[in-house]
Image 1: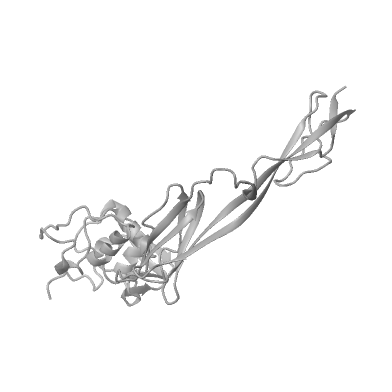
Image 2: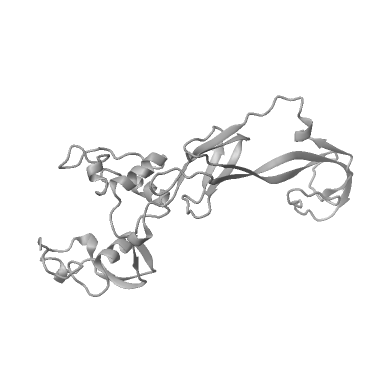
Length: 307
């Protein structure tokens, strides 16, 4: 006859595997770490008095509850063991056992709290949060009258983190163009392609529906991208020159010219830093083509000239 064993559980002791913080005064202090960075406005000027907040979840203590079992055999149909949720124990637990040896059932019990650490930027826009334990933190910056990007950083300590910078968006809202929602024709139409054939990847011409979005009126300039580089969020362009100028990026004469020699990932990093994103292929095509009709250029089918 198949036998099962019902466990009558008796709680006899509570054993702490991790000593509470209050009892660790005689132990070597745990190492601590720091997070530092700078907060600037859209012109790269420091923002003083910005509130810096770091939050994390701390485990204050962990105990293990040991429940010695007194085994009592009984006959019946075998059933699966009952799975208990975390931080819970029961005195009526049915477990499987092939023998009559005493067994100990172990249950972890934890106490967790959300810890918040704050600081502020000095007159030069710099901040440092010190005395942070190891763990994962969410870092944010705020100041009344400013919109700072990114919204937050996710940081894991150790090691200490430096160069965690926040800034105002560098794109003037007046430089954004709103593209209304609706359907447009995406792809190539041989009848409206400046007398050129359509590439295979541009076919067929098809209707695409998009939600409303905004796109910048102008390309990202050298001076705008330089702010991202200064913040540590973007690498500098591969070259400082252009096809026609030996000195281009970093030259004040071309500060308002489009930035070049950046990879797709660099462009994506810049957009994330500025609180935006790169447009999709469909968004870019709709912004350039418009929705009025199918035509070669935004102004029509006339070949462009210098007039």
